[in-house]
Image (cartoon, rainbow, N blue to C red; front, side, top):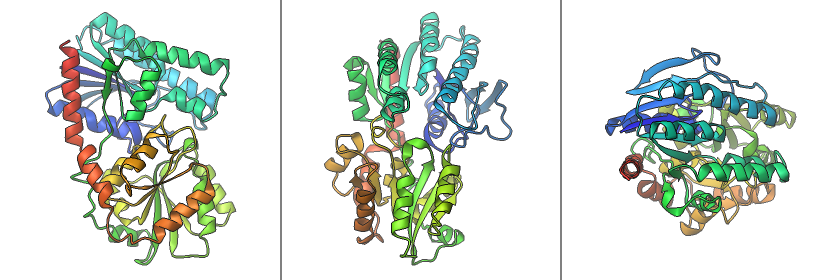
Length: 410
């Protein structure tokens, strides 16, 4: 099977969609697929193109058997709504030229990852011209995220954007997404049930395990064995609502053995650092994104993990960081409404994590106090059991290849 991946993000990005794309494509090659990735140069979550890559030219590589084509795009230093739209549109245009050059390659499947929806029209045209099956894989419902976070209101523009989104999605041969709540959302947008594929994000449950010792890294980072580490690791952007972590740090400031560690990068990191400095929070530590080899140690050194989002984001954006927390058997505090996917998982799997209302500092602090009062030395067996049964990488990718094969053979 010949597959083209059409997506903004790819490795060596360490978080989010780029990480999953960069893991998925080589696994597809191992399963005898011929894979080409039409992607952007790595820039996320720092919003800065990595060294040795160029934002203004096409670059070709072969990475673990995958033919990777990097397409030019505009990457804003300061992300605003208008600049983000230009950013997404620039990739849609440049990647269309890259796809055009492959119009005679006879692909069986073209797989577009949302975001970005801007690429959908040309992806559908390309599929029509080549006879390929068009698959939209939804990591983020970007329209829902945009309007759910109040970035562009909820008036005429919102209704128009949602109609366009629905019209485009219904024209793909299949729509895959990462959670059952997101599947229901796709149905509400008009996608037929028999077109939907469940393709969840995964964890390498053989690599990220509760058996890893984080003591060495904890000491390297300047913490004592008695310190309680509350860890947030991932993108530091506007949609996370990480101000709530600073509220909690201020509350626990007198308990000097409780440390808040934020590991990551993103458009909001400088603002968050400035806010922490203004509040004179000596119990808040910022660290850069860690290489994948260190992730199990980083997860192991934490006593409590944080998965923080604003209201309205939890079902539009299912946080990928949670898969590795569960695989590590971590004790987590998650901000999500009860009727979201995260809320339902907490209800159906008691003690998998503690779920509290988003943007509620009082509930957030109470959740932390409840977790700190527990015995956190032992790993969370409910979380680990869930990861082994639902998040194992090989099982998930094997099933996806099977679903693609059935689609191509229709």
